[in-house]
Length: 502
Image (tube, rainbow, N blue to C red; front, side, top):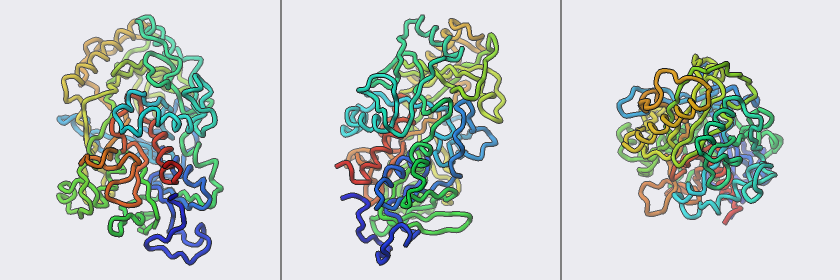
């Protein structure tokens, strides 16, 4: 049965004949979180004019689509969340920036839109094999490039690649191919490795977020309500069924009722909201005096990301910077590493950051490390701690060290510049950062898996009417950046919610 059939719902009067205007506090589908996933779910589900869809986002409405080479994530940005984070168990806390705007991180990032590989999906449930997800990847995109077997040409998200490479990208590609790595023109083929141009969610040098692609074209739908500046505080349940969410807007609390709720608040926000709603590890909730509605030990656990260390270098010449160029035009993909030759110093691309060096990023794409989201207070306004536990294994440290050696060798061969204070053998623990590719924390799995939070249709176990449609459901971190895969998951969850896929 489609989720938007007009059956009576708890707490709702069905006397009114016009569901769009009669009860503004009720929706058939309430989408919590207007980031990369939430915009997809709201845009797709609201295609049914009989289905009233409300999207709430704590940040402001979408910023105007910006040039790819300007990343508004610096210390003075008003469109990012700043989460406390600990990269390693013995490391001081740092700050993690995530998009806090309609469109989410996809509205403020560099436009990287590389798909998970076919091999990545072998670690997902069988119903999420590459053969099963490929139609959804094709449905979401408009990509005129490459083999038509892998690409769609009529989806809402434009996918482009840089043809006239920046001198940094061109020199890096030359060095990598001279070193024996294959050139791959399409890194969105099922198992593409080698060096090649980055697929970008962009058009003519301007990033295209899912807000641009899925919401803006349908802003006139009377059954689609988008509310910015509204923070979800907790879910409201009637027994084992979700009936809405309590939200805060302008200092006032109110209840938004719904027949179905889809959480799309991301790998930090979704587990945070569940735990403050009493759904999570009982021990952690009880320690803070939070009521335990449903003991789900997997909520907030199994967090994954790609550790990244950067090799700084002093450019041999100037690094020409143009705001309309992506800061990452090419990458080298190996079995477990991604090397990223950034086209501009971070000090040029990120307002408020002082960093004049050229940099090559070295990211570990299949790390052993698993982290967690930890509540620090019973107050839902207090952000949780993102605890990564990076580089705990000897294998991770060795792999990242080898990647830095490779980056140093390619940098020397490219003639781009001289390594600044380090070089081959650089300690991978020095200058360790993160790719900000947060995934997991509400992983999908089988009914007999005590740490699974959702089933293979992304329904929260033990709660009727509650779904999760973002990257927190990933059972295993993709070996590529997650943005394209998040959009694919949201596409599929939207079809589940709408009753379009059996």
